[in-house]
Amino acid sequence: MKTKSKKIPQYWLKDSVWVGKTIIFRLRILLVVVLLGLFLPWRQNIQATGKVITLLPDQRPQEVQTNIAGRVSVWRIKEGDFIKKGDTVVVLTEIKTEYLDPKLLEQTELQINAKEKSVLSYASKIDAINDQINQLENNRDLSQSKASNKIEQEQFKLKEIQADLTAAITGVNIAKKQYERDSGLATENLRSSLEVENRRLKYQDAIAKKIGLEAKVRSGQNAVETAKIEFRNVRSEYGEKLAKAESDRFSAISAQLETEAEVSKLRNNYNNYNIRNGFYVITAPQDGYVSKTNIMGLNETVKEGQSICTIVPDGASLAVELKIAPNDMPLVDIGESVNFVFDGWPTVVFSGWPAASFGTFQGKVYGVDNMMDTDGKYRVLVKADTKRKAWPSALKIGVGARGYMLLKTVPIWYELWRVLNGFPADFYKPEPEDSKKTK
Image 1 (cartoon, helix red, strand yellow):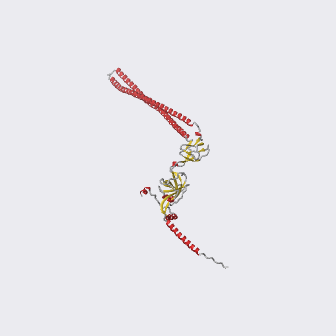
Image 2 (cartoon, one colour):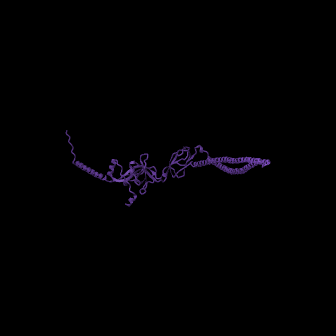
Image 3 (cartoon, rainbow, N blue to C red):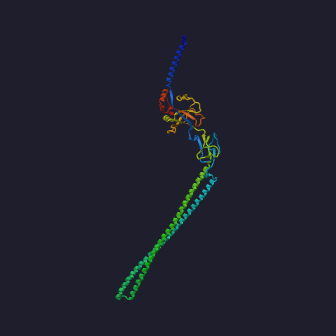
């Protein structure tokens, strides 16, 4: 049997033609809209992630550290507490043997007093040696003066004897001439033998007197040399005594200086011990909340510089730290506008149309690092734009943030072409606020 083919109703054909024309019309309209949309303005931007920090270093989370090693004896805080600057966090007890003596300060003070008395005794000894040196110098001067006077006296005596010797020599010459003359006259019977004998006796007496005076001259010369030797002996004797006294004085001064150095060292130790006693009680460096304790329980030993807990300051001036790629670094400038999306706050973001976005917050770039971080990115610091919407009061340090740094306005078709070709955003300098006001 032959099957009869069913005919398509005419109204179906008419409806299909109408639907096709409608779809084509709508596609054309859509194409026109898309083409027109490509010429709409688009705000170029740099997207970066970061976190909330504080503007000032002293407003950032602070780790409370120990200055000395010790053992935890008392806890005065718990996590979540709000504490003020100077409040006690924990109390430590000593563990090092050299500081365990409870009377360490008293013993050190006694040592200081004893050493100070030694310094005074050395000072008295130095004064006594100085007096001794002065006395020796006076005695030396007196003895040298006596020895010098004796030398002059002996020299005067020697000159006197030498004058007598000169006269005696003259007398010997005269007596000799008289004796020789009378002896010649006696041969001619002009002088008697008795007169000649008298002349000879006078001549012999003159010679004897001369010899005696010559002996006295030699004795006087010896006396002068002896006086000079005594003068040198006086100088040598007192020089030795003064040298020994000077040596004793310098030894006393050296001992005094060493004792003063020991006193200074003991005072330094005393001050160090006194300051160390203040390190047993660890206090909060500022107002804030205790966010984390790093030491658990009691009697736990801590090292020098070990972290006890972390305090998050209250009422800090917040900022955002963003990390940008090196490719975007030349496009970032001080004063540039940044839109933020904070973790935990509902937002609707149109990155190219910031005015159409909902739930975003605004900021201004106020710092750009010129050195790359270890992660291969540059750090950009952004603070709140006080002329725009205020940042949430519940915003905390460490909250994640996503930033959109707004750049030049370009058509959408240009932006698509740039992205498809992998080109960076156009170089853009924000217009100064003053020039905007003048316009």
